[in-house]
Image (cartoon, rainbow, N blue to C red; front, side):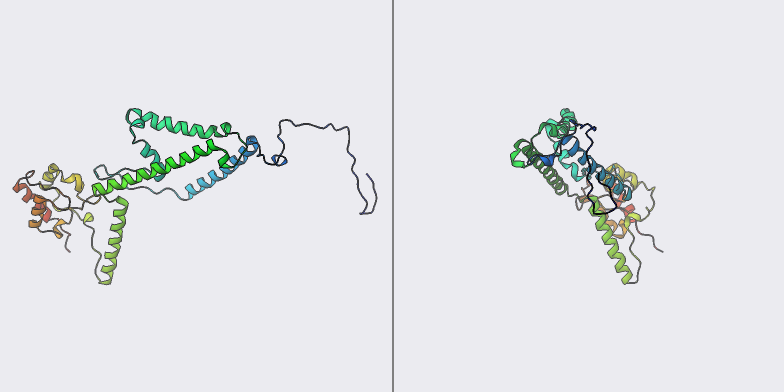
Length: 293
């Protein structure tokens, strides 16, 4: 190496031949040196995928901690109109388990066998499909399996949702979250109207107390099956109205007619209850009114 005090002098480094050259056979060469070929799956590509997965997982955990999942509606075992449904991303599996050869006696095949095969194939796919071609039309097997999986998930999800909508129409059921939204909207509109008129907001019938709650009519209604639809506390459920505050809506004669002949999907109890029992129930329901100040 030339030494001097001038900055423009050229410095030349001489290699030391005593340092042996090392051949790292286990380290693959950089894939950019081979035009048209991809990088090694292990460890290059897999390491980058793991890093991206870790970042996504940390972000997801932060999101779940910052915004906890809201609680659903309180379970009501007396609500016979409720149609259970999973979250949308499980609809395809929910629909798959309805078919005869993956449910019933074959439920293990449907819950463990088929999903196990699918996820196992996904895990070993990089080891089976070792081609260097990245264009999907040059990889017919992998592309066909991917398209088949996507089409199957979309088809099963749509069939499950259509069946759910059909069940709602068939039973005349309105989902609970829609009913709650409608009731909240009606309550807000009534409160706004009451505020404009200078009055007080109307009371929800379900919040009214029962008048003479120990009346024998309550036992008659329980024996007739009225509580199965109107709930044990008579606050109603789903599209079935509450019986609290009924006296403010109907007279005793109207209640006798409704119980005897039925109305709005309610069955007729003529023949199941005697005239005296119907009169006793109607008399008690007519007493269910909002308390006066």
